[in-house]
Amino acid sequence: MKHFNLFKRILFAIVLTCVFISCATSDKKEERNVKAVLIEHPERMFWEIKKDNASIFILGTIHFADRNFFPLEERILEAFDSSGRLVSEIGGLKEMMSVPAQMQRKILDHINMEPEKNLQNFLSKEDAELLKTEFGEERANVLFMLDPWVLTVGVTELIYQKAGLNSAESIDLYLMTRAKDKKIEGLEDVASQLKILSLGTFEEQLDILNDTIEELKNPDKGINQIEKLKKSYLSNNRSEIEKMLMEMMSVPQKASNQSRRKFIDALLKDRNILWAEKFADYLNAGETVFVFAGAAHFLGEDSVFEQMRKNGILK
Image (cartoon, rainbow, N blue to C red; front, side):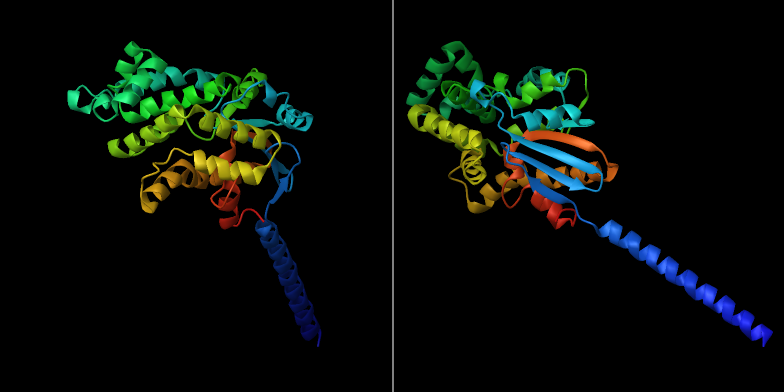
């Protein structure tokens, strides 16, 4: 009988231990399965992802701005100043200052010495003369010797300048300066960003260039579009911003649906998939992180947030 009672006590202890282990395992499993929550703050293009003690503040930006974009709301600045980690698309001021030199090296790799590749052969006489007027004949003649994407970048910047916006007054640059000596990490590097600018075949780049020149030839239309984007951003009209940014994306208008999809995936979706993985790492680190990057990455069905949902990270 004594042996039987001892056996019962041992059996009970084993069962009890199994129950505790089961509960602990279950608790850990539930803990692992807890998803992060997305908070849409009332401030302009401002979100927060929370999980346990981790927070990721996200500010969607436009890379051209003017004084009307400032000051930024107090809550945004407080979050920026108090965050332990800062993240932008390419890093901080050091990386930003390296862009012109890296851009110059990339441009030199895309010089077309063959006369038949000179862009004047592919543009109408009217368009070529317009570009000579806008850039100056000497500079335009140099640009004509390069791949179409280089000229597209120049024309695009010209259109934004005509609308009173420029990259030197951007929110991105303002925050990089505000950070002072604090390190700013990059979601990407400068080389990756420059690679995006040169997407497509020569013919596809030429189509995008022609589309951009059309905007330059109709300045009122282009300026009105940019003014509308600016107004939508300043009023925090997220659905309108999403629609406009997609319309303004550098995708050849004459392209097939398949080709357009290729461009959109390269410009947004493929990058957002990689960014979503980085956001998951930030959450796992349990820190407070402030991310500022192009607003288009946080809007629509291919956004960083949607990629995180697909990965089971975000509710």
